[in-house]
Image (cartoon, helix red, strand yellow):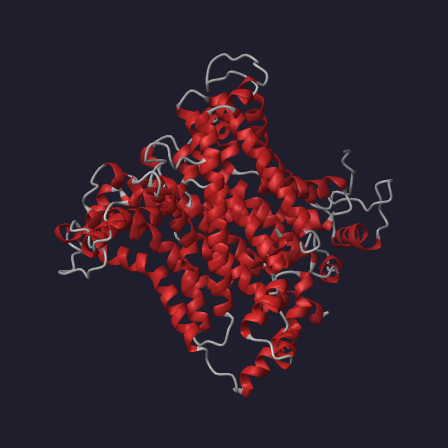
Length: 312
Length: 321
């Protein structure tokens, strides 16, 4: 029983993208390791130099963002993006803070994102559990394909009616955006959760049931904790999709005072368009939270991409 | 579908009741719904139905409503009448809509080729014998977590201020003018920023594909005296072909929805030279063309479904479902 209990957890930590690939990975891993230990193969320095140059193209726009945000308005306006700031000036940040009404936009973005993350993990895990455990029943089986069909539905197709309906229902605000964000994350999340749930042996639940646990208790105390690694992946993708989204909030939220952080950045295109140090300080404050979250959750981000793609 | 009536285990019941209930539902299979299937604990409906209802209200109803209005002359408010296929016929001969399809498909094809070529080569590099693998990989994934609109604003500054300055300094004429202001070149800027942002996802999938190739295949190739190029072409490439298909189709579907990056770079301009399908559809919201643009959206939907069907056919057997 303890072996059975331990199995699903390590299974989730291996980056094996799909069931069919698992065996190949198992074969490949020891081979590679043996090669490395023998140490006959030398580091390929040509490849490394090329990769470093490519990495620079990734880092350059980020360097420009940071250095521009630290310049004075006078220095920033000369158009040379690659120069170092001299002198270093933080006034861009204080001005950006006021111009975009940063505390409000930031709070709204945080609330929408938090609501999306919690809502997606809860609704998707509950629905997935119900679907997997009742697969032989038509309602549950069909629900799975019904919910997954949204992956084929691009947002622009339903955007106009959604704008119309959210307006009618009083949801042309961050609450409506949160709801829509959750709904558009469901397909991907349910796909990941159901695949993972199928790998959890049923015997694990038997013991809980024998001990008298109800379905809810089984889910709450046994299944949901087991789902944790998958929940982490689902949560991070919900976070990134919601935090970075521009299209949906810009169309759905009617009151510009309630806009999210990516949408308020547009004021630098219309007004204040020559205060580059201010606009770049604002861009930096908008992208920094996602980068920080990424730095702490790299593993799940990388695994999630592979799992989502190979299963989808 | 009738709801089978099961014992009310969710709300009340003694330990024994619950235990028995759990067993009958999941293990022994003693209780059946009369059609040979085990009975469903009603709690499962509570787990699923709210999500189904919300999903239907938020996605299915708007989709159905939009398709319905595409056969009318609805302008977003007020009265409307059925006009049959008039909107569709008009859409198929509307130069603005045709231009947006031509632009979007051309953009998607170029981007998908560029992204897959670069991502594949990077993946080969990142899985070869190099040091700092984890660190380099972590750097390459960063663009994926940055908001498309914000990074487009950053590139907007580079394209319209820094590059022209560089062009003037080095005397390269086509660089000294902002490519965003050039109707023939602006699309290239959109390709570059989209590629910059979406290479990481494609790259990670290729890395997974390359790591799934067993090492002894290469050892066998080594024994046969294969050169690195022959190994890449005859061993690596055929073995990751499935991943190429996934990446090409997933990428193509994503690029057809292009919007954020365009808003941040050109906003559809200069003129309407970089207006995507999504941008054209959204004009229905402000331009009084609601029903007309819903016909456009419905056509777009049919195309998206066709591509998805193609995806399922090509990747069947590889999917976990």
